[in-house]
Every structure is written in C-alpha cells, then in structure tokens.
Length: 541
Image: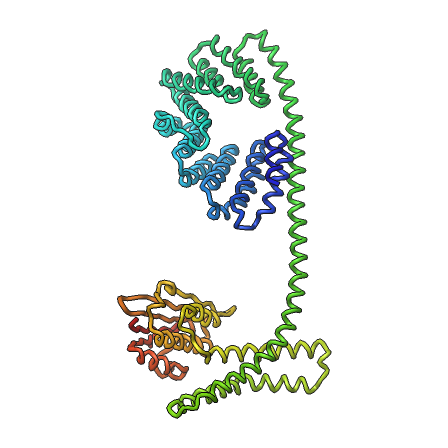
C-alpha cells in the first residue's frame, strides 16, 4: 500500500496517493508495533492536504498521530508532526500556535541542521508578525556558518539559501540595512543557481524585485519581475506564475502591462476551475477513506460479537465440568493433607486448622451445596432456567472453594514468590475495591529469609481478608520501603476505621502481631483514625 501511495505521489497524482496513504494508516492503526509507519503515513497525508488547502482535514489527521509520538523509534517523526501542525496554523494565520508547535519540534530535534531549519521557520513566523528584529536575532547566528545536512548533503545549500533569503527579507522590511539585505539576496541567489531549480529561483528574483522597488531602480525592478515570472512558467507553478505576473504588470510600462493583464485574467480563471476540480477529487477521496474505515470497523465489531458469544458458550461448558472436578479434588486434597499430619507435636495445630476450615466450609459452602443438590433432585435440568441456575451455583461453589484452598495452600519461597504474593493481593481487587502497591519492585526478595517470606505472605493475607470482611473499604494501599537492613510495610485503607485494639482483635487481626514478633519485628496500629484503618510493621531482612 505504502509503495503504491509513494508512486502516485511522486507522479503528481495526489488524490490517488491520499487514498493509498489512508489505506496504509488503517492497516497500522492502532497497532503500536507500527507506530513509525502509522505516524509517517499520516504526515504524508497531511502534506498533500496542506498543498491543496484543506487545513481543517489536515489538523484532524495530525491529531490522530499525537498518541503514538512517544512510541516511534526515530525523533524525525514527532519533529515532522509538530512542524506540519505549525505550518497548518501559519497558513490559517494563527501565528502564536504556529510558534508553539515549532518550539515543540525544536525540543525534539537532534541534529544541528534540523535545529537550524526549525529556527529559520520560527523566524519566518516572526516575519509574518512583522517582528523583523526578532527574526534577525534568530537568523544571524545560523547564517554565519554553513551548517551541513549529513544525512542528505544536497539539502545543505537549499537550506542555507532559504536562511539567507529570510534574513535578507527581514533586513529589507526593517529598513536601514540596504547593504546587508543585498548581500544576503546575492549570496542566496548564487547558491540557488547551482541547484538548477526554477521553482527555488522564483523567490530569489522576487526578493530582488522587492529590493529594487524599495530603493527606486525601475529598470532592475522590472528585470527581476520578468525573471521571477519566467522561472514560475518553467516550473509550471501556476499560483506563483499569477503572483509574478501581478508584479510584472505593476513594474512594466502601460503597453506591456495590458498584454500581461490579459494573460493574468486567463490564468486566474484557469486556476479557479482547476482548484474546484481538485477540491472535488479530494472531497471524494476523503469521503471514500472515511466510509472505508467505518465499514471496516463495523465488520470488526460483528466478528468480535460472534467470537464473544462462542467464547461464552464454551466457557460455560468448561466451567461446569471443571467446577465439579475442582470441588471434589479440593475436598479430597484438604482431607489427605490434614490426615497425613499425624505427628504428636502438630496435633494442636492440625486441630485448629481443621476446625477453621470446617467452619469456613460449613459457612460458605454448605448452603450452596444444599441448594445445588435440591435443584438436581427436582430434575427438569433441560429447562434453560434450571440449567442456568445450576451453572451459577457450581460457579459460586468453585469460586469459594478456590479461595479457601488458596488461603491454606503451600507458599513458594523461590523465584516464584513475587508472582505468588502479587497474585494473592490482586485476588482481593474487585470492581468496588481498588488496590495500590508501591515500592514492591524495590525490595531484593532473594535476600530475605524463607521463613520471613512466609510470615509476610500470611500477615498480608490476613490484613486483606479482614479488609474484605469488615472494613467496607474501596481503596487499599500497601507500601514497601527499605531502611538500612529493615523492611517497613505500611497498610492503609479507607474503610470504617479503628479506634482501639479491641476493635482490631475482634476483626481477626490478633494473629498479625504474634506472627510479626516471631521474626523479631515490631507493629504499630493507628488507633486514632476516624477515616480508614492503618498499620505498619517492620522486620529485619
């Protein structure tokens, strides 16, 4: 697509180029891996739109590139986008915004050549604002040296000629700089003559036309007006040809002026017709581009909806089988895990663990299991309503069983510990509860003792479990800090708060303090918090 677009552009078929550039950007958008192609293509489209005077569409197109500028791999892309945006505002006479975006481009530019070019463009905006001294202050330093373009050496003389042209024009407009203005125009003309480019020469001869108009030399004024007009004709630049004709009519005698006037009228009429045709062609191209994008989006939406429906049906079937298997497996796992702990010194711990799990199973699963069994006994499972109810019951049982299993599962302390801890904490995040973690990655977890890792895991698990059951919090913050050879962990939420230790103990946090003390740590509860609950604990690495 991009090769086709460039081929049409090079051959002057801008409407076709615009169509294929648009096709290219649709393929790239919104894939971040193609940020360079996406932004580059949008820049090409904008250049075509600006050449045809469609500044509103150019601005709309440029705005689409802004979110991808930080994802590009080369600074030339954001520089180009900011520069084109500056041109857009210059062409629409919003000079302050033009300066703003030129300065953003200047901050992104890397090479000295590119920076000098942007400074020249900023000076050009100042010239439009009639701030000629400000323009001179920018142009004089970069005009003292021949700044080379190391990437494209042929641009070196083109850019220097443009800088000297702008500087000479600023001298001329400011006044009292006759010799400096002439010197700049003369050097700029000599450089442009070596390029053998009639289009570039139009500006040089026009500059001398202005110069001799100001300093009253009718003969040289007319001569340079003729040269500018002839260059415009050879370059087939209709707009410049018309403008230079107007200057020639003003500079020549009455007899010749009449002849040029007829040509002028004919050229203006022809230009109006051609611009109307071009405008219609570009309007069609833009309309087709938008229509094509809308159709693509509609097809993508339909495809996504079908895939989502199939995925939901598939997930329901999978959940049905997995839930049953997982519930049975989890119950068997808990039974064998507890039965194997037969040593005398662990009897008390086993008893407490069995009692707690049994209570939790009875409180959270008994009712759901009873309702599910009742539903199965009733039969009529082929009815959609009963089938949906059965699936919902099994999903609830699966979710609660998984949570109970996780709360009592073995804790890994190897390289997987970090992901296990993050997964445990994120499991308490819901649509109503937002969890923020700070400083987690700053801790060197491989330097911490395995036993301390387990204690930290269980303490945080108990804090979050207490939050879920009692605090009614919507925001939870956990912060990790390293102070010398100690870890400081701060937990805070915006729940109902705590006034004294009795409240904390009643909410199941009595184990937190005892756990921390087993690893020579200290814990501090915030007893005076009216809004929320906060505690911090410290233990040595």
